[in-house]
Amino acid sequence: MSEFFGLRIVDAGRSPLLGFFVAFIVTFLFTRVNVRLIRADVRWWFRNVKAGDLHIHHVVFGVVLMLVGGVAGFAIPDEYGGFVVAAAVVFGMGSALVLDEFALILHLSDVYWTEKGRASVDAVFVAIAVTGLLLLLGVRPVGFEGLEPDLTGDLGRPFVIGVYVGSLIINLVLAVLTLLKGKIWTGMIGLFIPVLLVIGVFRVARPGSPWARWRYAPGSRKHRRALWHEVRFRRPLIRAKIWVQEFIAGRHDLIPPERRHRRAQERRDRVNRRRPFDRSLHRRKTEPPAGRPTRHN
Image 1: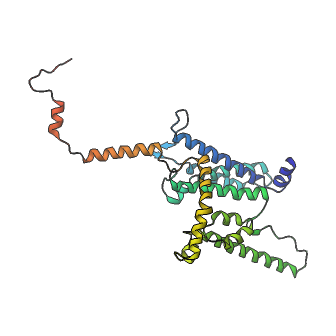
Image 2: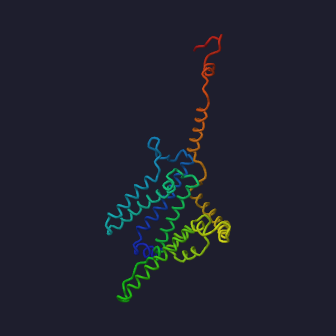
Image 3: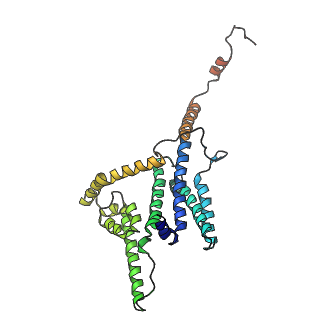
């Protein structure tokens, strides 16, 4: 294990990437545990960070950490390897906080615990998958591995460059087509494993994807095949993915307690505003009955 770590991580110069990867996962898990305990209104745990009535989301702290880690990573010389790793750790912590509220940035609304909030967990899972492929497998996106020194002379070097540029363009085109067919995971991972892009391009598109809207007429054979594949294969996978997401990050289809209390208060306020105010009734309730002496203490 130590030999693998030294060969694949340290000697390959991936120590900052490892620091980013570990910090990203640990920060995301801690953040989700924190928000779930806050949502459960646990007495001995922390509360939301507020400045008066303003709720400060953790994406704010994430942006600050990303700025500090990113600037430090550019400013620190390469010979100070430990500080470079520390900068990568700070950047990973900030990235986790930002992507954990990716849905809030996308919708410009507090949708953290709604169905739309699952987009944040999807973004985190994609980031973990991509970083893991970069770190553990040592692969590069769209087939990039760097050009070796020219061993074939001046005539061979243009040929090698042309082959590389051509494969790069082909992989990018296949990735775009796969994404247009609604296959997000296949398109993202296919940037590192190009054979998945070929499979994604020739497979039927998902219903509702841009490709299906443009190419599949309603009721056509391809449209029926897309619906069948969605029901038969895709939906069970989506249910399994949602189960894993909810196990890690909590359910996203429940109203949080503070919003439920706020809605109840707003409902009571609307009822009180609509109810007419009868001064004579209020006076009869507060004044003592006529003919009875008023008792004083």
